[in-house]
Length: 372
Image (cartoon, rainbow, N blue to C red; front, side, top):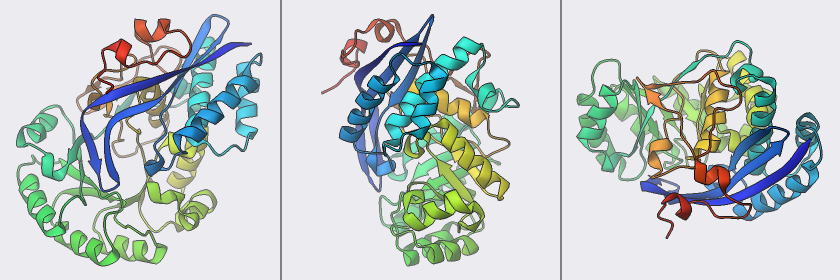
């Protein structure tokens, strides 16, 4: 039975600002969820980010407090069932509680979380490098990513005039070795005319995909752009648009693009994301799983989920290096991939400071963070 559920607030500084057409982040704030039952302790991470499709922080805090009370004294299995049946609209909080419960449950059963999600899950997950905004990328960073074995480099675009960005992308592409592609993320920067011109301008470059090209994601416009593009267009935040969300949950094959980007914290958990991903893959779409630059407690279960999906392009999970410090050891990237351990649970192991923190203590400053 669940003996306790602690909510530990944290504030983790980024090593450099995370910039996109939707704004800028200098730190990540959230709550580490710690659930104990018997000899086991499970962890989850609630780091809401409304611009990415989650609930606001105040709603997340209320949902966490509600579920902490509701789950007390129940078995992990009963708690998971009650969580799934609760309609409260708080996907980041729901995901955090579910991850902690699944971490707890799979530790008790002696199974890696990915194997519980899918018996044939892989032990290695290919990931893309995240280089940041196009205008801030140094040639040394590109060379280092290629030497490290990454075959897909993700770049934020839509931050400057399209003509200037096309010039910068042409120069960047000229420096790439063979078989390395650029994954561009516009974060809804363009109108349909701007997006069409941009797609035409990069058609001859090694573009692996463009995510979120449109400021207003109309189905007809997206379909026309995908027909124009020689590479996949992908939807991420726009999947919360009513029309696109209806297609996602009803008929993924009717979506007007070739790729989906799924964030468990925005969808509401690993299990819900897995269901959507499997249906989309069956309909012929590609699926990428990405993080929200969460702490290691959130990144580990997301990597486990990615390992449960068959033969997809590199996932967006090499984000731990953006944090100056972390709440525990993050998944290591070697040769452009994350190798998952055989140990039971999600794989997250808290640092000594995190493990011993009393309920309510803010994490971050105690871990040497700059939290100002």
